[in-house]
Length: 107
Length: 116
Image (cartoon, rainbow over all chains, first blue to last red; front, side):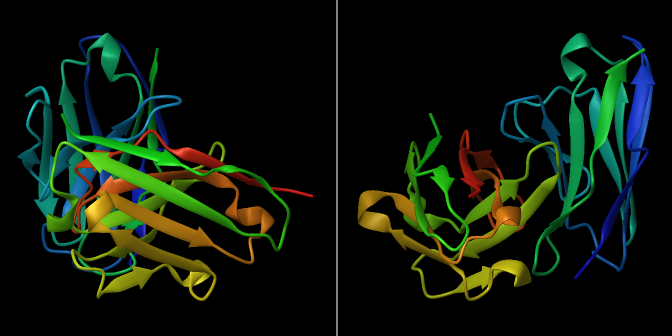
């Protein structure tokens, strides 16, 4: 199975900040990487797919990059509604696997 | 509007069974791979199984192989997950999701609690 390792596990930030979350795959997944946002008690919501493509309706302050084994999610200009938990997920092989999550908290 | 609505969760004893359902609307479910993803209380996301458009191809995570069965009825726009030989560590919210490489749409989830 492909292991997905996210860091940090949590980050404290303020409105307006730029934050970066990292996801590392245990083997080459090309660009088969997606990012999700999840708020408490809600289902995850797709933000980024194919490592860098923005899902329709997602604000442009979210961006993704990377290929192979190393990927990043950047939020430029954090908004109050962005305080949530973020997960990466690989779609290269079965079983599909997720990172452990990064909780973005208000400083 | 795309909607996925899960049902069938509840409290079940270890060793018991449960059948989860997911009814979709707003898109032709028969054109997409469909998945089940679960999340234990306070934990991360865990992909469970998926099924191709006509039900001829399925994949499972190792921990549920031989115990869970995914199926679909395209005429009813429904996807199912049969849970057998349930264990305490199967306790989770089970989400239905659309997609193969990524999961574009999700239901609200249904909670399965395995406890004696």
